[in-house]
Length: 225
Image (spheres, helix red, strand yellow):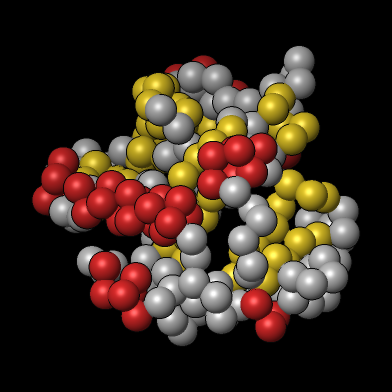
């Protein structure tokens, strides 16, 4: 909210779809002008700009989700504007900021952000399998990230390692809690952390039980017989 208000402005006439349980999560619905549509190199993309990291408590539990501005530049996209949100609250909009304003184009600061995100995506447009010898995972076996996400992709290397990317919707530690080296998630063991701007990339490999683990497993099986 603070970034959007201070850097981009929220006073322009558009459909402002919020939620009854929070002021921090909302949608601004508008229709770009024909001139603006013509500037998009690849309409239909979903793009994201992270503006605040998640807030965690002393036990590393997320107490407040991170914030990001997401851009849905697709003429055919549908959005939820009525009913209950899965995280709580109901969709709503302020008086005078309803659907009748959705036909207005976005102002310059917001449109400049849209073009900036498209330029950034164009620089990353080369498929990951060509760029670094990896292939995209859809979905990721660790965090569940799939093609509905807006930015980073989880990837698999030629050696069979999984590179699980950070994120605010899909995130291994949001799904499974704090992970240490050696932690096992659904048969995948955490082998490495690599910090990037958005957080830590977690590298997983198939879990290979140690000699002691195999011995304990055999002893437990023998005790049951």
